[in-house]
Every structure is written in C-alpha cells, then in structure tokens.
Image (tube, rainbow, N blue to C red; front, side, top):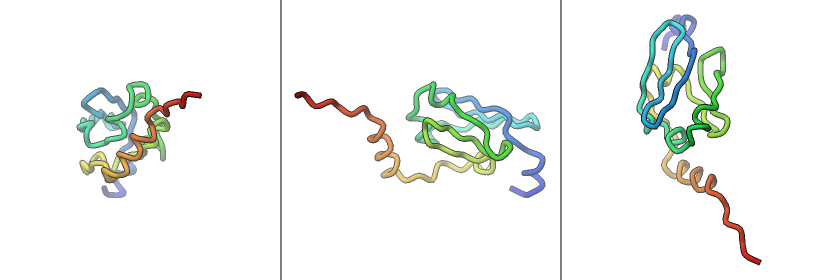
Length: 103
C-alpha cells in the first residue's frame, strides 16, 4: 500500500458474522473477507469477535479476547492469516476449559 493511500484511508468500523469479516473504511469502501482466512476469529465466540478496537488511528484492528491484530494493509492486499496450523491448534487447545480432577 502506498504511503499516500495510508494517509487517506482508515478503518472506521468492523463487523464479524459466522462467515465474513466486513471492514468499513472512512472513504466509504467496504471490504468483505472470508472468516476462514482468520482462524482466531473463526474460532471465537460472537461476543469475542465483537469485542474489537481500532489501533494506529484506524490502520488496524485488535481483538483482545482472541489475541489477534490485523492490518488495513493486509485486508486491502487480501492477505490471509500467516499463523501456522500448529500455532492455531495450540491456541485452540489452550482455550478449552480445564477439567477439574476429582478428589
């Protein structure tokens, strides 16, 4: 993304449903991206997906409950998550409730 585009474009709003990440830009454009490109979002609950905040004056989005940060530059370039499948598996496993041992 050129520095000129970065100056003129920022994220204004994000919506996530069961299949799509929709990113609204301040210049009126709307990007719709497949949710399966972002495994942490795909594996998050609706409340976790909807708990987001803009970072870097709209240059990215942070989901604190999912430990996920994605950039406007990546959205525009159509980049999928670069996180390895092994890392995602470990993350999913760590999110599972721990069973209590019987006394």
